[in-house]
Image 1 (tube, each protein chain N blue to C red):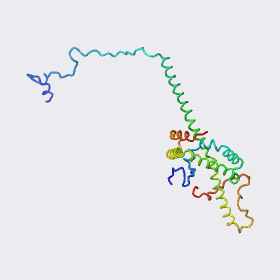
Image 2 (image 1 turned 60 degrees about the horizontal axis):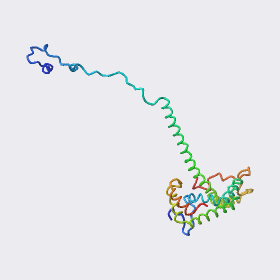
Image 3 (image 1 turned 30 degrees about the vertical axis):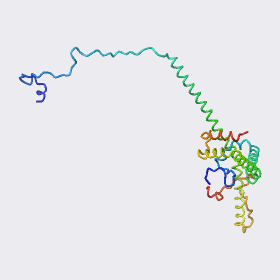
Image 4 (image 1 turned 90 degrees about the vertical axis):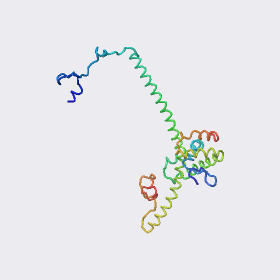
Length: 143
Length: 108
């Protein structure tokens, strides 16, 4: 029923006389549409592009090298500072260790005084080199 | 005593990490003989009891150098040490204070 209402032609006798309602082109047709490729041949040549890109790459790598030089200098400065203050830190730690070790040897002698044949202190290894104490009992706060 | 103070109550510089890294270039230049002797002794024998004397030389040299630096340019050294403490011993972040410090107490 609605189709007859929409496409009504005044004076129409039956539904079969309804005019066509179509979406079509405007009178005279549409304007022509270009679909042919138009890729121009102007612009830089292949060699020009290649040289530009490799030039940019080379300049970038040169900047990387310069930056690495600067970073290496900064790291060298840091390491040189650490090398300079290593001896004083080691010397202070040696003093602390020696006093702590002496106390420990006295404690060992006191504990083992009734054991026959016990040589107090330094009965650790046979290689002759000095090794730091292996158990963690001297520095319980660290270990 | 705040943690970033460079000196203790009697005016002696405390060898904290900030103070030591701030004066590391001076230490490396002025206490080089004692440092080298101590390191050679350590390389020979790592036993701490054998290198105590050389260690005492190193400590005496470095602490004396710190005291001398602090007496010659206290404000610049305090500023540099404070900057080092703030930036955890990062040299690149304290360039301004480093320049001021090295102008006042030159490396020689």
